[in-house]
Length: 75
Image 1 (tube, rainbow, N blue to C red):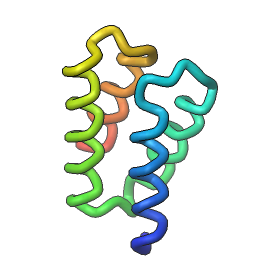
Image 2 (tube, rainbow, N blue to C red):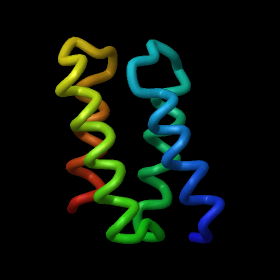
Image 3 (spheres, rainbow, N blue to C red):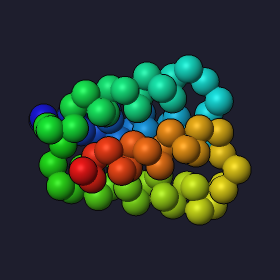
Image 4 (cartoon, one colour):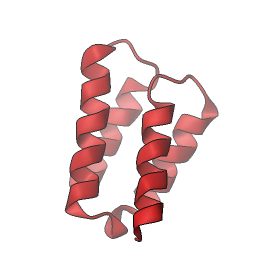
């Protein structure tokens, strides 16, 4: 995965956190499909961004799906 793709993925995750939209599922599915291409740094940033957002907004829409994504990319 090149730098541009990493930036796009990180930006999409950050944008979709807190959104109540079908786009959340699209982003999550895309990240899952690219899991093997993510660097360790990518995975750490994804985990940090999502857990930080959930900590600040514990009732965020799609919380369970975001947490499942973290577990998926860590496995």
